[in-house]
Amino acid sequence: MQMIFFSSKGWRSWGLSGRPVIAELMPVLVDDDLLFEDERGVRDTVAINTWLRWLPLDGVPAPNSWEFYGRTLREWCEFLATLRIGVFDERARLKDALSLYAVDRSCGPLKRRLAATTWNQQMSILSRFYAWADKENYAPAVPFTYKEAVSIYGDQVRTHRVNQARRRTPKRHVMIRYFESDFAEMFVRGLAGLRPDGSPDTSYRGRTLTRNAAVGDFVLSSGLRSQEFTYLLNVEVPPLPPKPTALPIAFPVPEGVTKGRKFRTTWTSYSSLARLHRYMTTVRSLATVGSRWMPPSRWGEPLVVSEADARGGRVNGIRVRWAALTPAERRRLVAPEGGSMLLGVQANGAPFTAWATVFERTSARIRERFEPRFPHTAPHRLRHTFAIRTLEWLVSGHFMEAARMAHATDTDAALALYLGKADPMMVLRDLLGHTSVVTTEAYLRRLDMTRIYREAYERAGHEFDLFADAEAEADEEFADEAVLV
Image 1 (tube, rainbow, N blue to C red):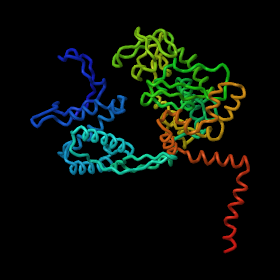
Image 2: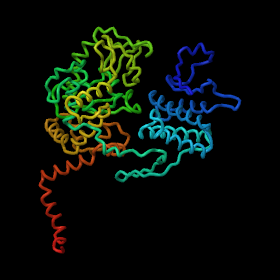
Image 3: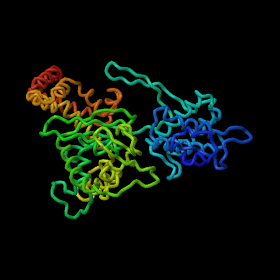
Image 4: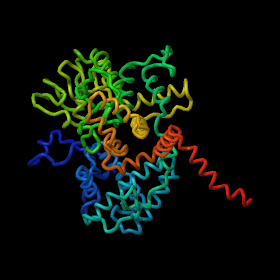
């Protein structure tokens, strides 16, 4: 079975009455004989391709996700073909095939094995596909078995189905997924080409160190996802306040790059924003002004910008809002003065998007030369670090003290009131862009939330001398036991 990606280029020569109503880059599965039907009727690939085309209506708007969904279905179909079992066969045969597939993917040939997390992602996709096929009367049976589970947060109780085909994985909270403060500082210094103590690393000859350190520090202070900071435009970076402030600075995240295309506002620190502006006015400006870079033809038509401001500009003569542009469109933007419009650029003004490679190479260099315990670093580790650090500051009163100082000086009174009154979990929910606080709570439990609250409790106890009375009361509880012995 083959998987191709749809393109409407040249559709007028196909003899059609109108443009095909299929999204660009939508995966299409085709049997090796290139047929969609035979003497037995319409093939299963027709139903599969129909479901793939409707993914954007089912909350899957990203082309990268479409490709993963398509590959998952293709691999499942190819496995079923080796057993001579149809995609929409009877339930017992499909369950047998699923059982064999689980064995093949967990302990079969090495090149076919999947990690538990990847397997669970594939089972989620197949579950969604068969639920749709059952509803649309394509499938006479669903091969999965489910059980009911209950999630409780405060007075909120939710029931949901759990797919029994999922493999057990380690509890997320037993793995350290964020940087402690010393490792975070070490990482930013590594991005800047410095040693852990802050001195120059004369044996390292990295390029664009100012860019890497400025963006890395900014992500640690804002919690942006990889797609969000990779495709952020330089004109979308807010201006630097005239004076340094201890309060966080609001940072709007355009819906064009967010998960689910939902606008939100996070924040960043004054120092991180100042560092970002220094990069923009020096290294980035030198790389882009007068640059002759143009996007390659395989990306599509260049989008030449004029009359740009913080909210939008003219793109090929048409006024548009930056927030409406997708990552693929943002990558094709050519600035009025030359070069890419993206925040991160290469030395020739071209857009830079390989942040995962930069972060991993930096962590590998630190691990090999300075600190063997330093972890592998993907972009999301920086987001996790932001979440944990922000929760620590919210719980410990760090921001409340900053809010008190701001309120006393009548600076940004609204933010001061918000920080002083809002529940920490609600604040973090808004910053991370979660739909509900239940999601935030579940997310934090996979990190280290209990430690944060325990340490905040201990700090408060020592500060107000609460533990002395508590220890005395606990000793009294065991006094009678000593007498009895």
